Image (cartoon, rainbow, N blue to C red):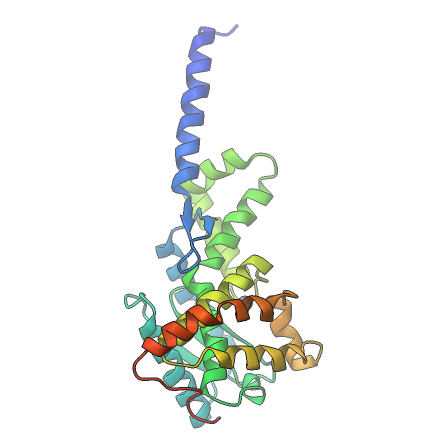
Length: 273
Ligand SMILES: [Zn+2]
């Protein structure tokens, strides 16, 4: 027999809903530069810790390149872009790994990793700024945290609300977030929405850093033509190419040309690589 009166359950039910909806609301944030609203159930601090851990794994399992020219280019261009962001509190790091793949990524917290294979498709600093701006764009918009949040809700099936409680309330849940992120954090395929957003943030920050935003159009035009070619395939597997990528970027040219004309110093396409 139920020892509590019915109104008690109603009260409990309604108050639970209120608590859950406030948790849900506190789990929403908006992406920088685009203001798109995002579901965010993980904290930026925990994502930064994941980035630190993942970088240790990358260094342990990969071979760091000692190619001077590539290392200098990634530090020079990456450093300029990092300075143009509002994330001076990040412990930025830039490394080059030996790999024939034309790929790059930025772990949460500003850990930028570039594969040597990318340099076969990069002609100058401006083109490198395009790729690094895009990758850093994913990190600034906390796309990994967003993916983790969605993975949680999907795994929880129709029990989204209990998943939120689980994630936010239980230490075991926090442990799983960490597991999901370290397992998927590096090669997690981004959604097309996130791809367009990373392009958007990328072109804005490269222009702020003093690189000519028109370089972006040239780079993506050439690079995407090779999307079926072995070393380039991997990049497009984790960064799905939207059909409208170039068109969307062209729409951002008037705004970013203005940002570029206000930048000092103006680097144009920078050094030839
Ligand atoms: Zn991407």
